[in-house]
Image (cartoon, rainbow, N blue to C red; front, side):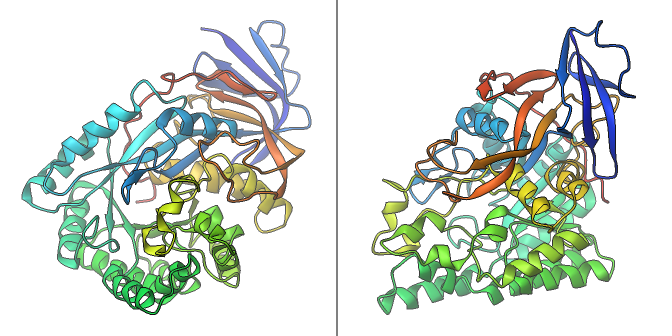
Length: 463
């Protein structure tokens, strides 16, 4: 086992900022020491972090590598997507295994293990998408929780694909209440949205901008309200994914104020992009089609406020990239055929640091949102999301003064555009360690497929 000493950096956690040396032995952090600890001569490797931040590696709790959607697949594989994540300072992802209708949960989970095994550069876990609620799948939920798959996602959207009705959702929530699982919810009223899609297309409204109109903010808020009420009936905790609308934030805040175990995430696209991007001419808006959709810019103030008050507890990416050429173009002439999803796994930590620079959040909240809170939410803390004795040595030496321009020319995601093309941000990961191994350093990549380990997870820390 080799030792690494990270010296002189500002170690930032969700609760503290201290100037300290960090001693790593093999894959684990073994000590935080006063600067000038005198161990530099005996360590196998010394990393000078003076003037830099030393933060726990990012945990992106919502990605979709190689996800099938609308007759195609997300363009990032587990190999390319986890490498891109590492470049951006993320050292753990939690992806979504999908149960197909008529198949077992186990078959879906096994299929995703086959995609990921031997291909991931960083550590990874799985949530389980439940598409078919019956007695067999409910029994399987109990087994999977025992095996460390402790969160299950359901959809109120996409009738005929992932959609579950209220009865199935309630039944799965009841099972989660009994076995300790966290129910994750895509909260949009898919039945009403499908009607609005048909009506818009009948009026000749086929451009990408109409994707945002038909997926109305009130239909996100209504579904969020309904999911909360069903969770109350079931006695189940609830985690609402990719919250984008001010009205939905209000539903979540009300439930939390009343003391219910309701949690939620938002994503960088909702914080930094808007319907102005969806309305770009010449089909350019297709690059920004995702669900929930981008909202008018006025919604961003409510999202930032929710992040400060902890009504929104996590920032994930919902990384699900489709190339503009050949994939997004499937929806020319019919916005409903544009594959839903955007790239972002490489940009999240930097965009949220820009939020620190811009005064939206503190440095400690930045670390909490990008690392500690998702690790705690999904049963990975303190192994992940912390720099403390016994934690995995997933560590980022972050240069808060580095300036960069986000661009498809320089990113490492396997997609032909950047959602943030030309955006200037301050801050960049300089050195990235995954379980003690340097996988990014000074603009060079040293990771490799297969070095990432699969993570079994405990239940939610916040319950």
